[in-house]
Image 1 (tube, chains in turn brown, yellow):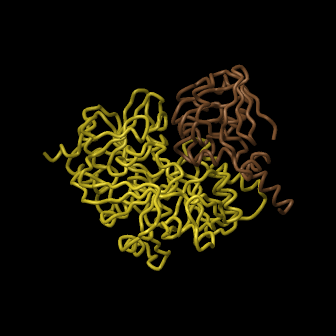
Image 2 (tube, chains in turn cyan, brown):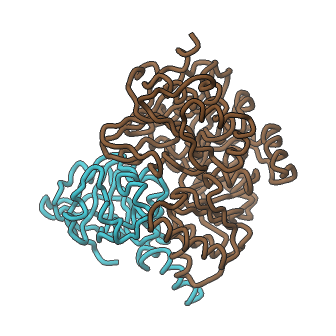
Image 3 (cartoon, rainbow over the protein chains, first blue to last red):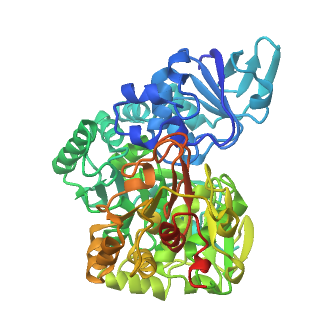
Length: 166
Length: 416
């Protein structure tokens, strides 16, 4: 799996799904809903965000609703990976199912600055801080979850398996 | 070593005799629910797989969030979901009530493994089912295969003792527990409500407590089914349904939390997080603009009865609006028969259609700096409307008493 390289966009603890995408926008098609991502705390996020950027956050990222629109709007904006101290359970599963690496790292949020460039190796969980020239160790995803990410999400993964019949 | 109720249910569903916390199992699904908040993503992901629904009798599509449609996008999603249900022959519950209330009224029985594309699916643990919220893609995969992988959760045993004091409800108990655990204190875990006093909590109270397990991050909340559950099943004409599992006496728990119900006071969750829990007495006097009673947490007949008792012969404060949304059509009818709806109308309440309503800002959307007190489950910033609005969560009685005074009020004060 290729190394992910991107600029960091930083958020705090307990970023809930109503921050990522407020409930009343769930009815919008994803391409419209993505404009509202993070609106309650950072209304300009969708405009400022640069494709292939990486989100770094604190504890319990994605808590609250099971709405898959939360990782889906982030994917639509071009988020290439999310690193958090911890993830809420359903959000974590949804993120992987959409093919986005979700890596837990206790130090990342404290050591990495907004706008910094970093590199992530999904297989090893290593996070390289290019300017600071240090490497942090994040969580290693089990092989079956890496396979889902590699295939671009659970649906392409299942389709491949249905076709190949493995 | 003995097994927890959760290990037993997942063991049976995965065809294994012995499963333990931490193990990953592939479990057969008893029932799958999706709704109009996330159904479009579920259906699209499912259609991409190009396969058939594994069992049409075990899939329910429920329109409950954006009903009746007030925007073209809502109408579009509803039209898409109705067509999907018709084409695939699944159950379609169109504007019948909040998905979780409809599910427990019609489909779920003890011992089931139920998944729903809504985080409050954990409500069904109230009758001893393993029920949890999932995302749309997992929902689509399960719709095709009838199975889903789960990591068997460790269980926190919450042992209830003592008796609730007057003006204190299961809602206050679960708010206290969430306040103590924190918003991520039970992530990946099961909350089991046990102990002698668990047997004194009504079905409605059990649903309220399990419903909010997710607010501490839990995968499921669960009560061991008993005679009270049996009564609930009988009322639904399903007395022979399901399997009653209970935890072994020597089951292994990751944590043990004793709660004496006698010591609990009326509680309130303050903005903007459900674990920001305080005694109502500490925040009394905050002026409100709106009160809301309803939702999958506290929109059942028992909850509406509490509200009706408070409102009878009184008026809602003229400076506020009070919205009540019965949790289902059935609850609405029962409330009508019992005379509660008339009490609400006389008091000046706006009675809404059975739906998720103000809980997520679908109705009763708040403007800047407005304050709402509600009997629902989440007070996240911007959920009910403007990013600078505020939502407090409390029991139906605290909500009703506050609706009369126009400010947050300790329910014990009214009778003094």
